Length: 230
Image (cartoon, rainbow, N blue to C red; front, side):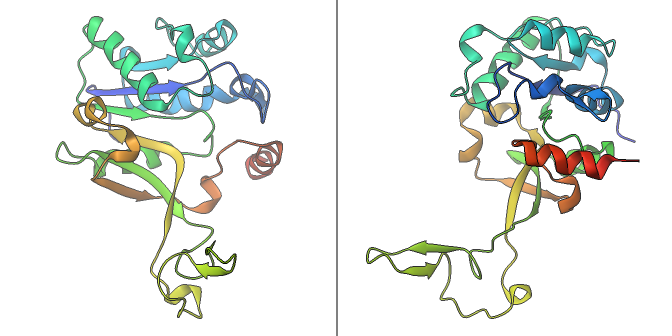
């Protein structure tokens, strides 16, 4: 098992949530959602390197129930739903720098991926090296742009999003991936220079579809509950 004292784990959890109200502290199979991500992070790094980023006092209290000291407080101006991940990450990095926390990589674990395992995070961390911008978890895309993902042309007609539409079987088309939101292992220098979406060198870590549910809607929640049932 990897135990990395130079990894800075960030667990972002803002108070507002429209799809599933208060989802970060909502009980999932008997535990607050955020506890699952905290447990994974504490398995892989010392508590001093596990930072819960929230603007919400109740989330701070629930996170602290795990025994983790929640010292960092996200500024109110970074609590809105229009604030990007980069701003949140940079503020935590600046705080950690001020506290003398030494790190050579940032691992972002969103609470909305409770099916992610310690092994998934380890696998993504093993792919990371200082000469790339990010190793990130992905799963096979539900829609393949070479096969069954379409765009509308100027005349309103559909055309395949990529290629010439000659593939008649999905398995023959080039593989397509989508980020599943579970694990991001980020180069600190890269995130200071540019947004995550601008990274030119991103390495994928594949996760199966059954562990790639990102909790965004009540239906997602029902699916995860069903998967997690004993």
